[in-house]
Image 1 (cartoon, rainbow, N blue to C red):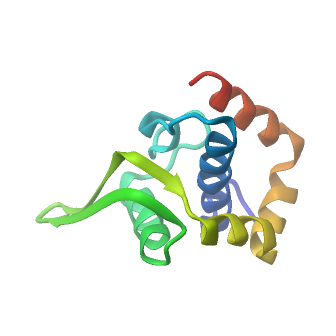
Image 2 (spheres, rainbow, N blue to C red):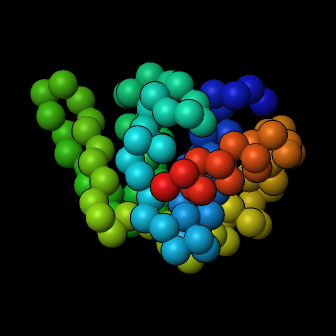
Length: 117
């Protein structure tokens, strides 16, 4: 597993959104976009990951649009993780592996990012 594996990025996005929900804070687009404090990945890769999360129903409040330049994802004021997303985050074996890979250091980062909102 590496820091830019899809499972790792999915875990970071879902964990951030869940921590925001638990803290009663609105997620910030800049905290989960492709070039943020938690990761730096190509925009097209990030768009694909978010598109998948939207399609399987793990997040809501995002809009996807295909343009001549490719897929574009935007976030609305009502963006959040869904119950299905929480269950996936907590019960999926790949998410558990991603959490183990990231370790306590990521817990500190996500807490700091959510606390800064």
